[in-house]
Length: 242
Image (cartoon, rainbow, N blue to C red; front, side, top):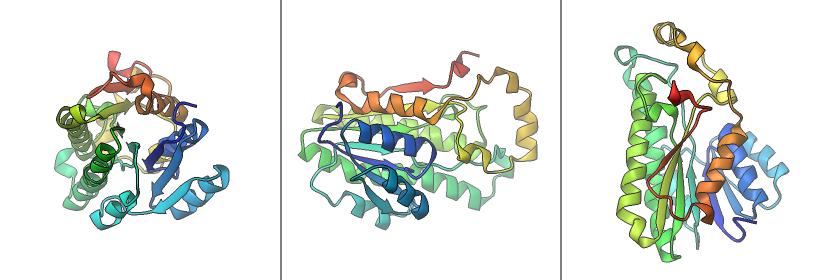
């Protein structure tokens, strides 16, 4: 078992990619701390995975994030929770949408990483895995606020790797492309955004599975990636090759 005896905090764990990561880590021996705002989803997950810990929290609120790390050890942190922006172009983004996307996609990982890193250093190191997006590597994969937030998360990934790598902290990112999740299908896209985006539908490879991303998360969390730090791995079926 590749994660035997390790404590892994996974955010956005109630569904989609986060749920698959929690299941994969649990199967590899980790003690999983599953965090989400969706209490019902966490309850279902706990019914499937024996011995996991579930925490209901709004990850955009510092006072709800920091207590998650009031524990003796944290070996792995997966900053996976995120929200989309319906492909909304910048001039159509109102303050509410901007703040919502940035608070979940950037503030949340910031609060969690800031709380986790001291614990990891105390215990000799750890691994942080951030779920970025194909939108973190280009400008035409999402709306303005989501794209900006994922570029910021990638910058945070590299900064953490640079500042704390010499203290045993590895921080890497995954950049999923089109993945089959309920999150992807939930919202009606912005009309202007989808009109612009639809011209490029034929370049998008067939959608991947959440477990495809979870397998990459496992690699980055485990000792198999011990010499990988500050990197981003596309998980997009070759979308960035187009």
